[in-house]
Length: 257
Length: 264
Image 1 (cartoon, each protein chain N blue to C red):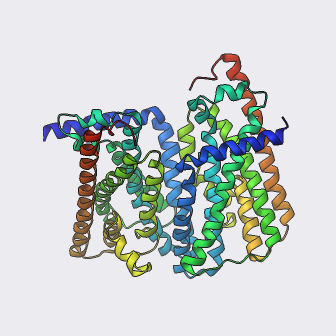
Image 2 (spheres, rainbow over the protein chains, first blue to last red):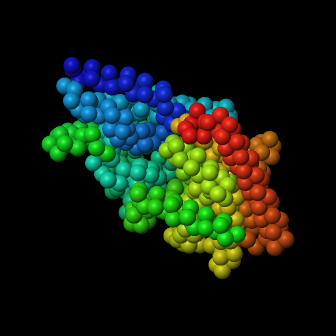
Image 3 (cartoon, each protein chain N blue to C red):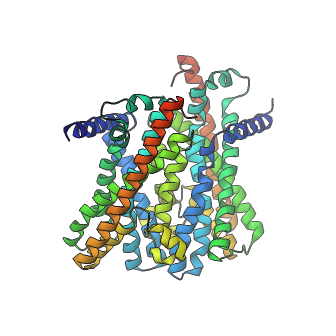
């Protein structure tokens, strides 16, 4: 079975599982409230120039939550449900299966962009128009790719780590700040900038905002950075997943929590 | 009184033992607590970005106080966990009655909630360059405690939903907390919302207590602060009444049709 076909089957599997699990819709419930909070603050401060930030940020949070919360649960839940043993015994490698399922979850997370736009338009009468639609599509696409890569890595890290719950609970807001998803990186203290630049969200947020404002100088560099960071995370995630599977096989711990 | 204190003690021991399975004091401090501090900082930075230092302080104060609400509403997860594990009937047959035992199931979150809020109250304002007026800021600490207590009642009441439906506890928790965060005067005054929303927000925990905290910081009259505290206490009591009614009904129906063991 080709890798793409494996990933597609994994997407279908995740779709079937998510339909039975209402918690997978969590981000779609949170995003409108986050948009409302951020927009209320922006609108009452009379800062129309920051409306786009407040609309885009919940979308980026949606992607990150999808990567961190749901993707991180994939392998532990498979193990708990007794699926992992047969998945590891199958001829297809586990890495592409995880990546395919993560892609499905990320797609749901990306729907938060549409939700936040709708909340801004209907709830606040602020219709955010995209000055450079082509660039916006590119920005969303590379951001989704980087999220899938990051989620594949996070999924592997969370499986290997003994502190899965701690990491899942802790890795949200620090990355929202570092990623400059609401307040641009330039407005953060200087000593944070190098750390921000290794978080793909920082490049994605700028790219998306630039696309909305039609102010996209040097976008290929930003898009390249998002793609590069996403690809590096994906490669590391697939390697770590393979390493984990091999170790579990060797030590006979596939079926243990 | 003595049996009640014993239930509180045992609930805390059980709760912290559960927490110990997930956190060590190091991972709690550098993981969870750091996350909460970053959450308050995240919104405070937006306040500074769109406004001035006064806006930042307003948002920061709201987000620090609301941490107490956020943590205490995690009782939803603890109670739903009893349902998932099938231990709800065991708690229901406790000699003291089901109510104190059920209401005590998330007490550990009130301790951590108070700790998180306190640490943030002391550390974040000076770190972000908007120091609070001490020693006046110290008077706000008992108010945060009151907010914590009323929010815990809110969490217990909403746990009734999570106890009746399978797999929705995280949805209930996040929506419950999200509603307070959005409409409870945390980031923008409640008056900003349309009249029906503003009216409905009066029934939320935090709203009046947070107003009292802001009043204390701004030097409001003791009479106004006491009125706000009284309203917060009444709102909290109402949520406890809802929780008690909800749990009574859950247990009585569960006893009758045998549905208390697992979510239907």
